[in-house]
Amino acid sequence: MAQNPRTSETESAPTTGRNSGLTRRNYVRSLAAVATATTAIGGAGSAAAKDDYEVIKAQGQTITIDAGQTWENKLIDMTTGQDIVITAHSSDWTIRNIGFKGENTSGTGSATFGISDTAGGTCTVENVYLGDGASTGNGNPNGHGQTAFWAAPDHSGHIDFTNVNIQGFADNAIYGSAPGNNGGGTIHIDSSFAANCYVSHFRLATEGSKVTNSSVYVDSSEGYVGRGIWAWAPGTIEVENCQLEMNGQNNAIVAGANGKPTEVVVKKSDYDKQAGIAEHSGSNVKLGNNVGTSPEAVIPDGVPTSPEEAASGASN
Image 1 (cartoon, helix red, strand yellow):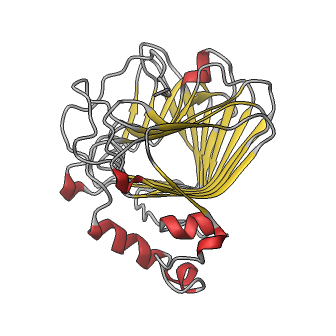
Image 2 (cartoon, one colour; image 1 turned 30 degrees about the horizontal axis):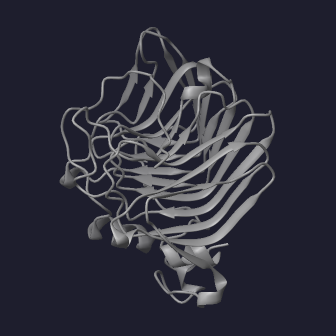
C-alpha cells in the first residue's frame, strides 16, 4: 500500500505519555462548549440521510486527489481495522466534508492525509472530523505513529485549513513544517480544534503561515504530552485569537528546532502559563497585546463533532 512518508526532519519527541482515542471526559467537555451549534442539527452524533454522503470502508486503499478536484461528502469507516491513505500532491484541490468513524489502528507511522500544492496555487481543507483518533497500539518504537495531515516538503503554494477537528493521534495533528526549508509553501489553520495528540498539535515553519481562531486542549489526567503550537525555522509564524489549554503538559508554544531559530508572533490569545513557552536556538516568541495565561479551549463554531456531521456538511 502506498504511504504518505514523512520528512526526514529530526526532533526530540516527548518520552512519556500514552495515546488513546477520544476520551469521553474530553468529548463531553468539548460538546458542552458548542451545544448551541450542535442543537441546530439535532445534537452531536446525529446522522444525516445516507444519500447525503458516500460511505467508504477502509481496506488498505489509497485515494488520490488530482489538480482542481473537489473530494467531498465522504464518511470513512475505520471500524474495519484497516488503513486508508489520501494523497493530494497537485494544485488547487479541495477536501471538504470528510468524517472518519473509528480509531486508526494501522501503526504504520505514516499520515492519513499527505498533501501539498506543488504549483503555487491555493488548496482547501475544510469541515473534517478526525476526532476518533488513533488506538493505543498506533505507535512505532521511535515514538511516532499516525499523523493526521502531513504537508510534503515540496509544497510551494498555500493550504487553508478551516473547521477541522483532530483528536487523539499518536503523532502531529497537522505536520506542516517540512516545506519551511524546502518548497516554501504556506499554511493557514483557522477555526480548528486539536486535542490529545503526541508530538505536537499545530506544527508550521514557513513565513506567512499562521494559526488563528483555534484551540488546543490536552487532558493531563490521560498522560498526553504533545506540544501546543510548534514553530520551526525559518518562520515567522503568527498566532492570533487562540486558546492553548495544556494543563501543564509539555509547552504551549515552542519556537525553533534542530539548532535553527525562528520567531512566533502571538496576539489576542491565551496560553497555559504552567506549560509555558520554549525558545530554542535563539528563537523569539513575541507576545503582543491582549495575550493572557487563562486559556479556555473550545471547539470553534462550525467545527464538526461527529463523523456523520462532517460527512453530511451539517456543521456548515
